[in-house]
Length: 314
Image (cartoon, rainbow, N blue to C red):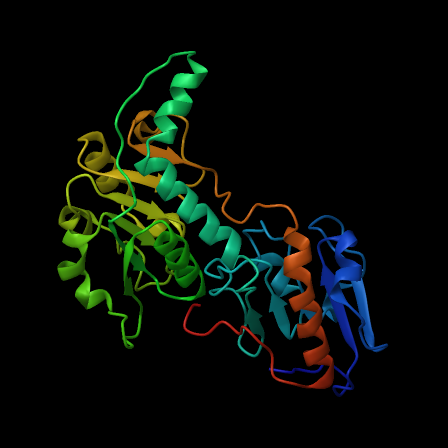
């Protein structure tokens, strides 16, 4: 993992690129052997061949060209929790690290808020407000219902706590079974009982297309699908058909494709609540993301094991 730059042994010196100049103080105190420069995706501040620790711009989706110009690279440290864009492009011997934990509460907050807004038809009332129309109607309620959390990791558990506070019973699915948590093999049994299904799994070859027509057909009439994960996990065509038929509702922070085209039929469906990948876009983002980055830099400089290393795609 700790590759020296070509031509010299590893001596604790680390050249770091980060994308936000204002985040430099948030890294905390760093060893004198660490040099931090700002690269926001524009003109490189110095020779990329010497960069050993890179924090890429969070929205950068084409890392191949820059990674190829960094022969000394040892760590790609993401500001995001998702790493699927980067997994195929990070060379062997370079550690890919995500920023899991930094977005847990904000993403869970979005998922709970979206579920509550959809079930209580707040999206409908918001549209009527824009039309200056007083339009009373009866809605559903989370209270007394069952939520199925597909992806019982840290974010999934944070979602579960919020939905429990709304009076819901919680069932959980994860990659690996543990007490109180099932696996994907249990979905056929659990889906028909869920009033709300929250998808919060990482995007991997195993989860891509997980929520397909069969998955959706097993959900009960009137149930809500909440996707706070990645758009490719859900079959958009199959979901659109179910929502258009009025059988299911959906609350989506991510879509496939993304952004969702302006002429896509999902936009106009009453049962669809859509936000533009805004789950983690809250105030104080840099203050949450960069202190763990500083700790990673100190670990690297000291030759210590890194945290949040992506393995098996997540």
